[in-house]
Each structure stands twice: as C-alpha cells, then as structure tokens.
Amino acid sequence: MKNNHLGFAILYNYQGVIRRYFPDFIIKLKNGDHLILETKGQDSEQNKTKRAFLDEWCRAINQHGGFSKWLWTVSFDPNDLEKLLHDANNYTKQTPSGPCRTTRPVTLP
Image (tube, rainbow, N blue to C red; front, side, top):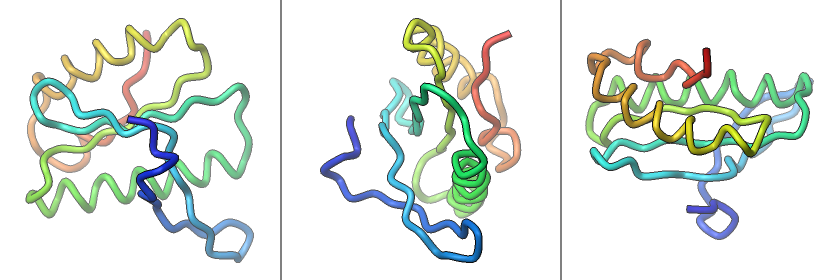
C-alpha cells in the first residue's frame, strides 16, 4: 500500500535536525509480516541516514514482538520489484524471530 495517505512516519536526525521520514510503501506479506519498501532512483547520505533509523525502528518493533515481523528493503531498479517481494516472503519463512535477522534489507545476490 502506498504510504502517501497513511501518515506512517519514522523520526530521524539528519544534520542535527529532527525530521519525519515517510516510507514509500508498506506491504503486508502473505504470512502476515510487513515489508517497508523504498524505491529510489539514486542514493544520498540523507537516504542512508533514513535507512539507518528505519533499521533501528524495525529492530525495536520486532523486539517488542506484538506487531508481527517487520523488514525493509530498497529498490533502485523497478525491474527488481517482483524478485524483492518474492525474496521477502521467503526471507520471513527462513529466519528466526530475533530482531537482528529480521531487519536486514532483502538484497539480490
């Protein structure tokens, strides 16, 4: 689901200023877990900072344990989206519920 009207935001600090980061998509996977998907044409230091805070948020929510499992990934190529979604579904099936393993970005080999 596109996040443009949900208002889901993660606070992050960039260059000493607290900002709100609105991830592009929130996807509920077949098994009930959630994937936060970012789509980017190119990367920047600010985007890397956002992802660091996103990773921290995912670790915290997964450690809490009451909101299903959350992972995140970023796509720089729209042709990779189908594979990223497939990998995310398989990733959640194969990993334990520990917070570190569930929040690694789903990446292509």
